[in-house]
Length: 125
Image (tube, rainbow, N blue to C red; front, top):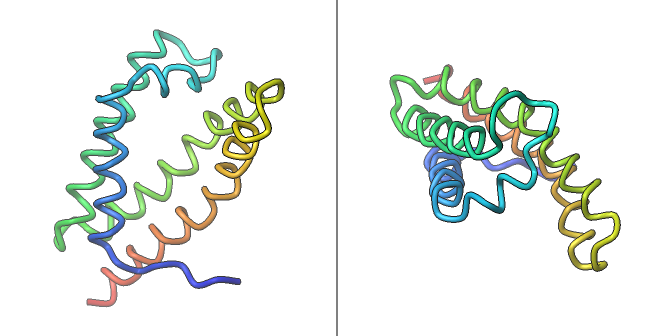
């Protein structure tokens, strides 16, 4: 199995970048919000972006890193249904779109493992 990265600042950067993307192109994220969630997709898009920004700040700071990294792992699990919806919606799209949508599904596993590794590394210090 490939090694997961351990850099907390890289993880924080990934989360911050995702937060910016949620604000910059919310319609891309609105489209993958599961319909079963109450409220508007845009509300969920912005809420998840705010959560990613808060997680990024928490992971970046050594005092909050352990808890924030574990929360990030939970967040990565929590957004998995959006990736499933994206893959389901891509069934009738081009092969390139289907490949990207399907490729996102297993990507959640290394993200969860990375966040857990950052949390364990913070605990050891």
